[in-house]
Image (cartoon, rainbow, N blue to C red; front, top):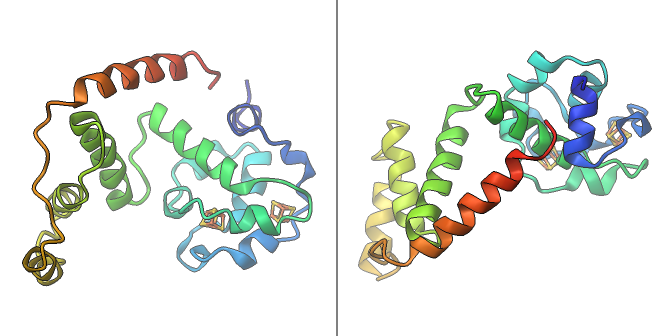
Length: 178
Ligand code: SF4
Ligand code: SF4
């Protein structure tokens, strides 16, 4: 299956509907930081530029706000295409184009697997530690702690059921087309 077909299969989009009006790029709140704007990502996918898309910063900076999707006059869903590209990059074992985002994603899933739910404070702390920016949020963390807004992490006792669900979901996902 060629790259464009893979993205279409994963995202459920017909990318041929995109006529490159760039309304998605104009509305994207993160476009100013992206190496490829959303419309360029769409065009690159159609041209089969797999490496350029999967190694881009754009697919990792996308916050899935779906502004692009709302603005598209053709009913295309660029947010879903971005998501599919991220998934493909992960499955291909590529390093995320924005390291902090990759660290956050991995930390999020690990946190969820351990606890069965997200413990925000430990997620942020581990993310900062791995990113080498442990002290960035320290003043804020201290204030939240003093006001009782940071709860201690739960003991990882109730995560077993969730871990089983997670393993089943992962096995099912691996059966899906790439
Ligand atoms: S808004 Fe829709 S049609 Fe226009 S460039 Fe973006 S995806 Fe393509
Ligand atoms: S979903 Fe992603 S690409 Fe679309 S507007 Fe939001 S940040 Fe930009």
